[in-house]
Image 1 (tube, helix red, strand yellow):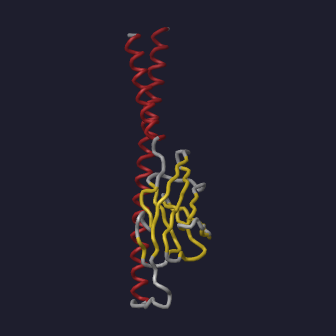
Image 2 (cartoon, helix red, strand yellow):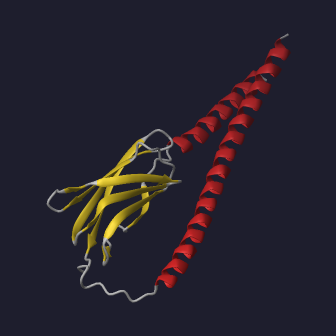
Image 3 (cartoon, rainbow, N blue to C red):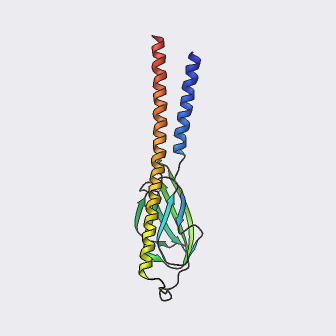
Length: 188
C-alpha cells in the first residue's frame, strides 16, 4: 500500500511539474508584423504593429533604425491584447529599416528579436488620390469590425487556456490533499 501511495504522489508531482513547465515555456515572440519581415512597402510608414504569439507586458520596447544606424523617434506606443503598436513622430522616408524589439512576456521572461522592411514610397507630389473618401470610410469600418472580431477570439483563447491551467492545478491539489488525508487516517 505504501508503494502505491508513493508512486501515486510521484505521478502527481510529475504531472503537475509538466503542466507548469508548459506555461513557462510560452515565451513571447513576434508572430507577425505590419510591415512584415522582408516586405517592401510602397507607401509611407508611420505606424508599426507587432503581433506576439503570447501575452506581453507594457515593458516591451522597440527601436527603429535605418541602414546607417540613424534612430527614428517613437511618438507613442499602444498595447492591444498581444499587439504592440508603435507610432513614429514622422513617416519613414524611402529606405531600408530594422525594428529591434525587446519584450517582457506575460510569463515574466524577456525575449528580443528584430525584423527588416523597406519603404519605397513615392514623393507626396507624385501621389494621386484615386479613391473617394466614402470608400475609405467603408474600408475603415470593415477593418474595425474585423479587428474587433479577432480581438474577441484572442481573448476567448486566452480565457480558455487560463481556465484549463487553473482547473488542472486545482485537480492536482485536491487529489494530493485526498491522498494525504487518507494516508493520515489509515495511520490512526
